[in-house]
Length: 175
Image 1 (cartoon, rainbow, N blue to C red):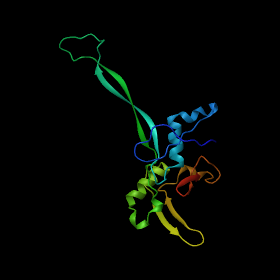
Image 2 (cartoon, rainbow, N blue to C red):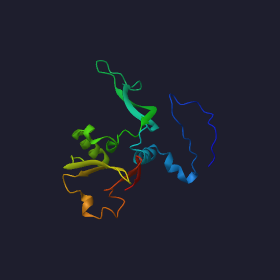
Image 3 (cartoon, rainbow, N blue to C red):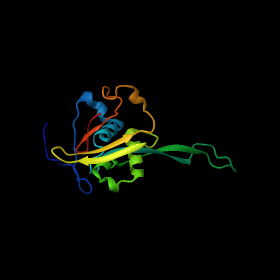
Image 4 (tube, helix red, strand yellow):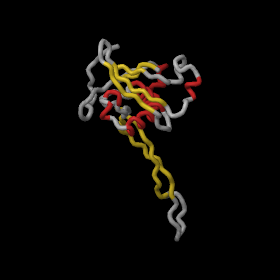
């Protein structure tokens, strides 16, 4: 892959710009939802903000000039789409396992559990610790309130279940 100087306008503030040129068969990576999904999966806990240029459509009610005006009645309204584009931060979650356990509240554990595992309840128990020695690691484990459906199957053999997730240096590696 070639590396070249960027002649485009500078980004507001500081930051880096990554410009990708895709092959024709990789056009599905131009979809905003696909990019947001990939960035959310693989950069969810990176310490610096990852932003994506997104478009948002909002609908406004405006008077309809083409409709007949009847005296004594309010003017007829029509809905008009208004599309705006802006930078949206993709990685908003904070890696709780990087903070000391004494600084993390039960509410933060519960919110992290609901967000990371797409759960609706709060965990029954949680364990948060770190070990140092020849190998150093930090661990955050949750015990769910109810037996998840995934545990009735092989939680290590199937990639769809996602029961155990591995992050190395805050980057998602594997389920």
